[in-house]
Length: 325
Image (cartoon, rainbow, N blue to C red; front, side, top):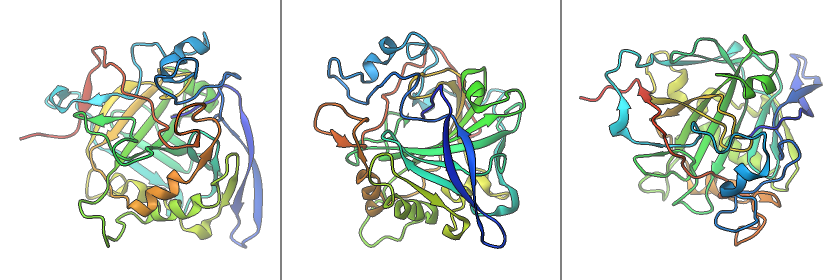
């Protein structure tokens, strides 16, 4: 999950009922750098400014903190019988309309910025306030054996979605929320390939649409305005989360941003349900180009393997609404 300390202004498109394009200037706290300090995902390469060196790159970052993310969710450590086990999460979209905004290749992650804030709300899960969606983005591997940031019992997944919500009740801006206590809530969805991937039909229409949209942002720093005509529904990315009848199961813990400055402001919800993604859809992600994600090594010029390794739990508790027999 990525954040910047400086506002990045972009033009995003929204559509009126008459079909007239309106372009809104929206402040977003997301960019390829934090405080002007470049960084990469290169591992085991001295001087490459990769995850092992993040803590040394900027004294204002928290990358060496004790509540860092991602983590490995060890299911044998989950607090299932604790009275504070969280109730179900609820995701609601104002008007049940397709979302609009801009999808961008910023060099680190394909990221969708919403054109209209306060339209997608997250509540429940023992969150004290309502949180509203700011953006969502993906972490993924150069092959199917790696990609996700979070793991479950040591198992990795080829791609992970982060839906980033912020508390606008206690914080005036997203930037302040990202650096403040409990300012952010992030829903993590881990996608998996079908057991038999030949001839399968994708179970997630939203992923299919996003894969198609990525063809417009293959080049670094490119962007594409997404209108309602694309028919992209955010709730389809985690369908059980929006269902009033079927509750999705999740693991909840206190953590951080997974990219610099690694601020420990995040309540994480790692979903236990793993929607399917096809090989063809993953290839659309792996086609994305980047000069920033990797400065050295075999993945120079590619965005894939844009994940941070799991961090120590350091005594933190993991809660869940999963009831084991």
